[in-house]
Amino acid sequence: MTFRKDFLWGGATAANQYEGAVHEGGAALCTGDVMTNGSHTVRRQVTWKKPDGETGSTPLCFGSPERHLPDGAVPVELDDPKYYYPSHIASDFYHHYKEDIALMAKEGFKCLRFSVKWSRVFPDPEGEPNEEGLRFYEKVVDECLKYGIEPLITLHHYETPLIFAQKCNGWNDRRLVDLFVKYASTLFDRFAGKVKYYLTFNEINLVEAAPYVTAGLIHADPQNIANAAYHQFLASAKTVIRAHESHPDIKVGMMLAFSPCYGLTSDPADQLLASERQNNTLAFSDVMMTGEYPTYKLLDYQRQGIVLPEEAGDQELLKKGVCDFLSFSCYGSATYTTHEDALIGEGNGANGSGQAANPYLKTNAWGWGTDPQCLRIALNIFNNRYHCPLFCVENGIGWNDQVEDGTVHDDYRIDYMRVNIQSMKDAVELDGVDLMGYLYWGCVDMVSNGEGEMAKRYGQIYVDADNHGQGSFKRSVKDSYYWYQKVIASNGEDL
Ligand code: BG6
Image 1 (tube, rainbow, N blue to C red):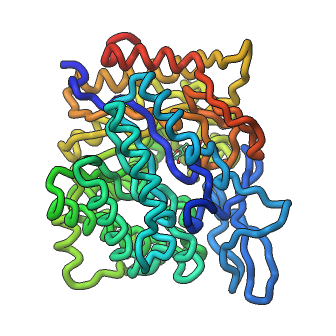
Image 2: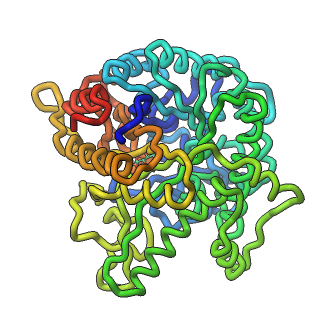
Image 3: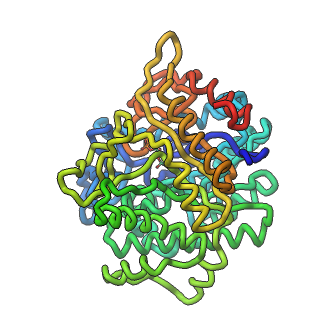
């Protein structure tokens, strides 16, 4: 057995990192649009304003322990040259979509994952849809279809409309559930017969690591983090139900951020810690793929005094609205230890407590390791637990690419992709997992999410722009483009 004939090879992107044009086409801002740029050592900030006019910024980003804006402060865009918001220009896909999709088609893409920005389609989430916003995404969909590329839409990729963060602490508020279903339904109806695959929430499990980024929480404690996750589960379930009722051909997937968890040593305490961390991630896919919280997660909530904001009928909705497939991001593995002397501090690429460096893995400049077995291990874990179709919708490596002789010779990216695709192939050929496709993350260079910088490039297609949005925005292809083209053409045989 090898990759299926209709295997969806392609790439993945997200509006807040790629699209730009945040003030064009009648769009309103999302939470990511008030986050400043950062770097490997400087955290991204959320800018804010208080009713008395005081302004400032707080690092509510990945890797930051901050969980609150100051009392009374709401996140806003500030007109102050000291703040640069990378999402506002990003890679300017808004004006380059034709060119980018043509390059992807030439590379052989069968599928393009992109996110729709809720606040572009509904600048007022309680109002009517913005025709210009819908029209933009329809043009992107049509452009994909023109080349036989399957569009895969992420409905929410770290893009909570800013107004919710300002008015009701984001996804802590249950009213977002039905507004989200209204938004998703608008897309289902508008793109009927054109878009078959949707994902509800990108990396839904990262709400505990970055509550503002994932769910628009400007005040996050364990209770409202649990509320936000609960409301997103409910919104996803209701969205799945709506899709199935009105458009039976649509398949809706969940999206999990996953890294196989290893214990650093054979000390049982390390193994237990790794298993607990992995289970905590899988609790999220349990809810979305089985319709129930696992007992260990409920007991953990109970010990913390957390009460789920459950209402009558919710349990039935979660059960009825399980997703059609499980999609996931996987960039590498995570290694845990209870041995204090082996812990690595923040800023070393590890963003979870208890993390240690894995001596068997090579890392990039941001500390992200290449694990040649992570995809096979991840796919087997999912397959054994859920027995459902699986889709790898993010895998890739960021690098400070340098242009030499007019191009980028990114052998390191080719090496990374080769071992990862081989690992995925082993899971299909040797273990028999049901895999729908593979989407390389950041196929066109875009702003990194964690650091908000352009220097951490993932693309096979280079974009001439720097960390401050300066450049010609001209596209050119790297060596990895030709390599991936050959992989796709051979359906994964020629690595
Ligand atoms: C995933 C996200 O976690 O990782 C993407 O879904 C993100 O949005 C990607 O860009 C890579 O992370 P980063 O921080 O290097 O951009």
